Length: 458
Ligand code: GBH
Image 1: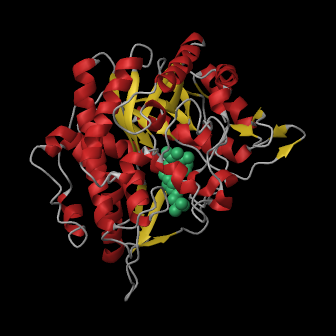
Image 2: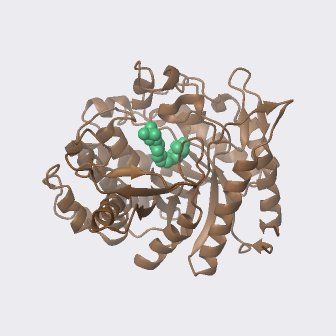
């Protein structure tokens, strides 16, 4: 293949999230979040791992920004921990929390790196969970307040903001299957949670635009390519259902102001949608400056087996759909199929089926079993994963998709939620005993890509 150059202003970045890297869980007035509670509850995470220390980024931000500068990153996507800024989730503001992110933004800007803030990457203040969490409508209004005060305070330095990272995960893993905090298993609650996350997004955009109109605002959705396991009608219906819950249940309200009718029907036994009030969907459907897409893999699904029994699931109403694997398709250490053409499909699907909006890949990456040998980590599979997916991005741009940037997940190894520290997604290796950072082969490869503004001939 020939050299593939990207548009001159293409934004090359890497991403992280607060609870996955910061540590300092009880310092400088930070409040407790649902992930503190969850990860300290026996049996919830592998090895009982938690984010108390994580990558200790809170104390190492200067070193970490230097590392980013060495990589030549044009942008860095991070999340702000709501409980650092508003320890109780409402009311009193903790200035030390805002100061930390102000310092991070300043150091990034000084290094020529554009800071990209995510207001919510899953760490709801525990007190708001105690008051009902995302299934409660009031949480949406609390989020809008927090968004407004945070962007008011930092919008002079951080000019690109996303409201939520992956509301699908917060709703359906948090309140459906319960594999994420707060660990609830209740289909109806998960559907209400999704609605209030979407509503919180819309309310936040209205509030922020009213007080800090000059910033760019968007949301990040995790989207999956989809395929039926066979061409049977039953498998096609399974693919329609899972595409509905994973992708369209979030894309349609955000970009069109409506819930997909077929998904509402699939959910009939789970939710009567009595939580949906007049005007809500118009609120959700605010104009976006950009849409962030996190892409990892494809779901290949099949019709339920006869007599299958529904169990608590992140696919409410479609609990018995079977998730299958194609033979011969390589997988990552998460056991996710590597499917770069699925990224082209996903980007084109959004660009061709929804009103136009600038797109960013806000996460894409892979976990592999990395080994530190003589102070080096050689990770050719990760290089290959990034290479294939960046070729997919290039193909999408050539097909007319308005893709403006790409953030690799992740800058460094970190706390992989319920998998704890057992899964490594970083371009930079982290030794959790010594906190030593070691750029892997993929980090050097990515630095070359950025310098070249594209992929070398193969
Ligand atoms: C992203 O989620 C997240 O934004 C990021 O924080 C995370 O580190 C990254 O992906 C890598 O996972 O195996 O049943 O426990 C992508 C969506 C969230 C889907 C976690 C799979 C694990 C469910 N993923 N989820 S389970």
